[in-house]
Length: 110
Image (tube, rainbow, N blue to C red; front, side, top):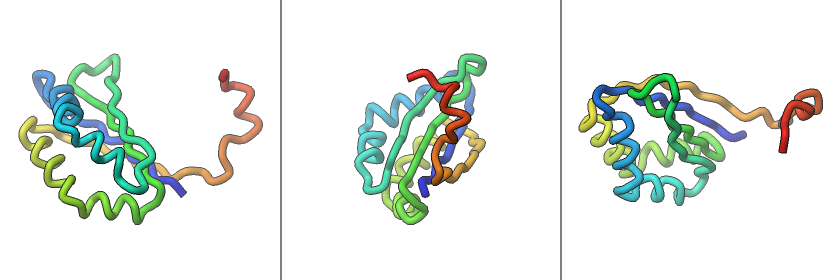
C-alpha cells in the first residue's frame, strides 16, 4: 500500500521555486530518492500560480515514510523551508491495491 503526499509549497517573490531549485542543487532530492522505500519525489509548477510548487512524494509504506521523517534529511528540508518562508498545504493518498479499473483504462492513451 503506497502512500503519496502532495505538498503545495507557497511563498512570495519566487521563493517556492528557489526552494525547489536549492533542494535539487544541494543534492537533497537525490538523497531522498535514494532512500529505501521512496517511490517518487518530484516537483511540479502550477501554470496558474507562480508562487506555488507542488511536490509529489510517494513511499512504499508508512514505515518507509516514518523512517524518512525521523532522518537527518528532515532538518535540512525544514531549514530550507524556513529560509524561504514557505507555507504548506498537504494532501495524503493511499494507493488503491486493485489498480486502475478496466472501465477507466479506455480513457488512458499510452
